[in-house]
Length: 111
Length: 115
Image (cartoon, rainbow over all chains, first blue to last red; front, side):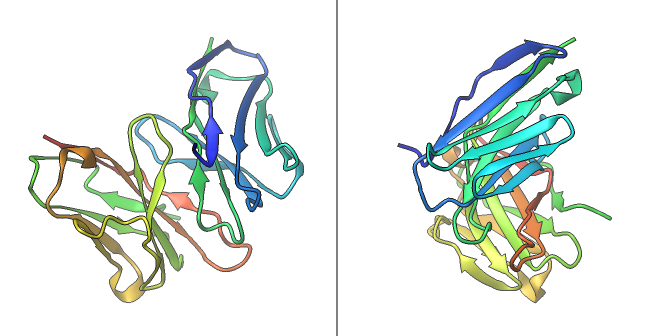
């Protein structure tokens, strides 16, 4: 069983929809939680960074961490075609240096 | 500010041949990472450098992979000999290092195809 599980999709939604992306994990030592966005043939870019539990909002993006359930989510409001990409969750324990990534969810926003 | 630079962007080789990838991190970033990303998977850490010291190489297949970061700036990852299963994207990332400065910035990657 992988330390981090993420549904690979693909997920296809119409423009303007609310998108929910999720990951579960098994290592209770994880404290740092991140979401990366990766466009085709590009490197991942950091989208959201959360330490421990709670919510964090940045524009149309909201990240949630529930450590009790070992479950993290990323919500995208008012989704745009430019949001079409693969979304990777990543997490680490003490210090945020040794990241463990999920498989990535491929998302398509249809105009 | 320039991002992480990697070269080449693409490489096609035959199995058993050697191959090398180069990475130049963001200026001032002390920590450098090499990841491998298989098709449809997330990146997996191969090695992490703090300046010129490899502080985590537990995931590096040392029988065929080697890496160096001379002078604590740019880095080279080498595979010799390459195997079919090494086909993947090799990503380099860098961060400032230190507490609160762990955000990793990724380069575009080198896409390797072994025939």
